[in-house]
Image (cartoon, rainbow over all chains, first blue to last red; front, side):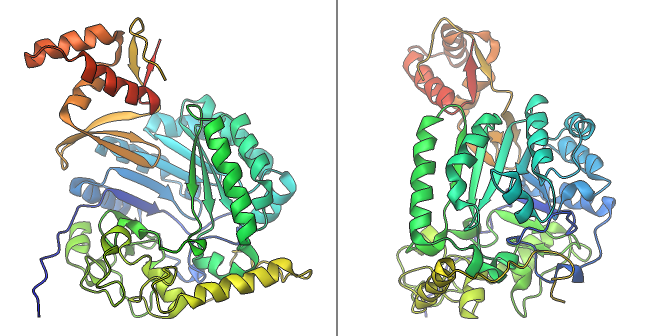
Length: 373
Length: 90
């Protein structure tokens, strides 16, 4: 048996603070757990402040306030102020729902650095359908106000089969709104998106057409608007380097205080994630079983274990491996070297069948009625 | 983007330049991203405060580090900074 070198533990750089699972929108690709109604308790203001302080001391510098809809938390301004005092660069990741000009100014004064507004489509009809809530015009107003008050404005559009045909209009809308950044996030199939995959996954032809349009636009707006294109990994033959490797860079704290190496990790079976109510952030990061479980390379099975690309993609995504093969320690089946790569071919074929059929089943919207307890 | 030696350099208000104690590095922060800088890049950016042109920045650094002929290195880095939107000229 060869001795493996000790695991080097790098400090967290990115803290995602999921302040609440509550949300006025019902997007059918929401990454929150499908049993989110089970987790009713939320950390107090004091707990969040302690978490922010501890993670900052360890080296975290990028901070995302997310959810659910983070604007629902009445202490958001207070938390933003605390984050600013600690030296975080803070990002508000919001649907824009309920965001007023007064609040935008108040958050700016408190030290918020950036607001990312999500828009679901380029037309009111489709936006409001996907969001499950009338919100299109308000979102556009919010985007303009964010810009007006000197924030870098990031527009985020999640791409899937219902809106992928709008790619040219989405790009034009972002440019017209004066976005500094446009994030075109192809749906990642976790949580509610996993549930709705057959209805959300575009066909290969749709992907290729949309990607070519987005890449061409990238050149057109170079120097004015940056476009981040999040690739859909089902059409790749190597998996994404998920989370830049397990517990190397990213730390997510869920609304109830559960600490997660990635925001889907709470769904892994028999996998006890630690809670910040019980441990310090430093103890969790360094010593907890969950954070050490897939750290480094020792946990890997073949073909990852002996693969010369393992330091590039870290075996892909643990949550995707679990969702699609039933084994969180397996090679991400997106990889063409995975013995279970056929599951990707199968799921693409199934989604394609739905895409080409006339009678699609309805989307399951993310709300408490549909939540699986 | 071509650097104009007659204009003043200002660090972008849409980015933040910050010393990180844990990393012992100066970093540029922007929406959901971070660039780690080496010492000389950080020194250049810290001088982009809206009061200096290329020649002023070069001169100050040459005096500070007691070296000469920094013009090529400094302008090459400032070209990159302009392209990435870290600095603007006016």
